[in-house]
Length: 244
Image 1: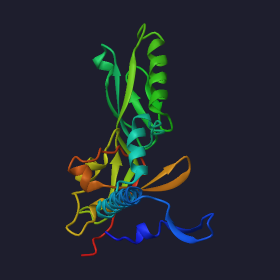
Image 2: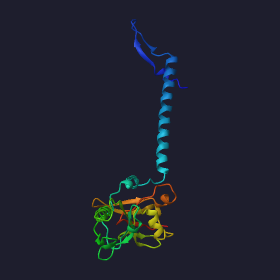
Image 3: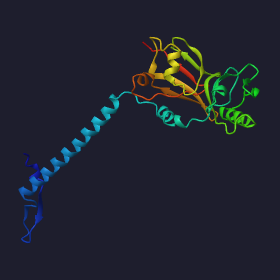
């Protein structure tokens, strides 16, 4: 224990008798209390710095995070807008409640039409599925059925494509279909090559007229650590090559 602290608590004061002498301002007990307080404060600072450094080290050692934009896409995919108008070679299913003869799957012909029972040739290219429902409902209501209940669901969007490039076994295009996921798209394209950087997969999508890119954590999706993503017509997927 250094006594410098105690000696530093001495000062020179002048008494009434006119002589100079050193007078202790603090007792030894007071000096020791001040010293202990200083040690306690220092330990507290060191502890804080230690925790801070551990936090910084933890950030540095953690693996790369998932693109927040991808997480936002997954959260919003249940609110996706309608996928658009029907086109040539598209396939869709029409179901009329309790009317099997009026239900079935239809493929749009090169001239943009389908042949529907009782209604003949109908120009459906350029319509949405909802518009086809309305058209068929009105047609059947005209003396064929009293209160037809019609539903339309697209089974295959051949007029709309998904594009896959890069380190994929069978790159190219695949037809879009309702609720097609990115995992299903890769399965249809034969999966990744051995040199693929799966977690750096890039998705390009046009949103409100603006082309945007997202990093897709495909390896984590396949392993079940991230949620799957539904694709939209016109999506472009690129898988880069690994550097080793």
